[in-house]
Amino acid sequence: MLLLDKKVTEELYDILILGGGVAGLAAAITAGQLGLQILVLEKTVFGGTVAVLESVTEYPGIDQIDGWELTQTMARQAESAGCQLLDSITVNNVQKREDNTFVITGSDGNCFRARAVIVTTGGQPRLLGLNDETRFARHGIHTCAQCAGPQYKDKEVVIAGNGTWAVKAAFHLLNLGCKVTFVTGDTEMSGNAVHIDSLLNRKHFKFMPGCHVEKLYGEEYLEEIDVVKLTSGIRKRLKVAAIFVYRGIVPDMKIAAAQQDAKGFFLVDENFMTSLPGVFATGRVVYAELPIQVLVGDGSRTALSAAAWLQTNS
Ligand SMILES: Cc1cc2nc3c(=O)[nH]c(=O)nc-3n(C[C@H](O)[C@H](O)[C@H](O)COP(=O)(O)OP(=O)(O)OC[C@H]3O[C@@H](n4cnc5c(N)ncnc54)[C@H](O)[C@@H]3O)c2cc1C
Image (cartoon, rainbow, N blue to C red; front, side, top):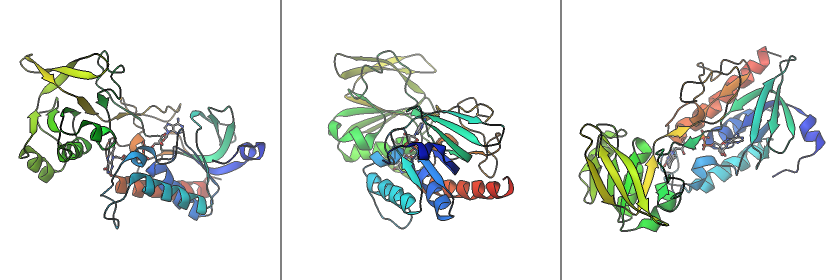
């Protein structure tokens, strides 16, 4: 991380990128290579959700890569393209000034100025919303099978939720030897049809559609859960070592005058610009579930759009 000094905070950047996951880093690489002055602010460490994935297999041209290696290479590429990368700074506020520049306030109290902003802050996993859920966090309740799965080898586990990553997580857990029950409020699994068919035929896999996890039991660690059938109200008690929650995300970034939908996702036009001119949004803060290669392409396109906008608006 670069040390902050007054010079950094007084500089007027062309684009300030909020969030350093794959979408933000892809935007930074493209914008930096165009010769623009770019600052990327990241709340924790660069790489976002992908950084913790043990294995990424979707990226074109790379058979398989560790998420950390992929994202740290992207961060180095962004720096080589001339971007400044600052980690451990949470962006708290974005304001448009009368001179049409933006002032971004970081959790360290510093302010940063830019002519345009790209928001790529992703969101927090949507949990089950149950009592005791936080008590069992990492003691049986998890949001990443690739990260926490190995602790539950050969155990009974539940996937609660739906979608591409939930299906992928089911395979991952079965391959670790877990017995997997897939609980979803929907009538069927969503994602790749071939993967779903093959999952339904796997030994040690059970599908419970139209059901919700209703209650959690256990002392220090999760031990049992109640699952309720939504149409009949019938409850079933299951012994489980863990629940992996895959219910999408809740974006938590708010910018006054940039419209967001009821779930908090930013609304953007075909150029990824929000309703606040000069503020762009891309990645998971716009779409709930898309694979890395799409978000990388979108991040890059967003940078090109922001660069074009800067040319005609300054
Ligand atoms: C469990 C799981 C498994 C997945 N597996 C795969 C897979 O195998 N293959 C695949 O293609 N995709 C996978 N995905 C999807 C992939 O992780 C996402 O599509 C991708 O991470 C989204 O990138 P992003 O940059 O939009 O957001 P994120 O990766 O969420 O990055 C957002 C960044 O913004 C930072 N941030 C947040 N708020 C602030 C703030 N206020 N100020 C500054 N910084 C902030 C965060 O710390 C984070 O680093 C998976 C997702 C999950 C949840």
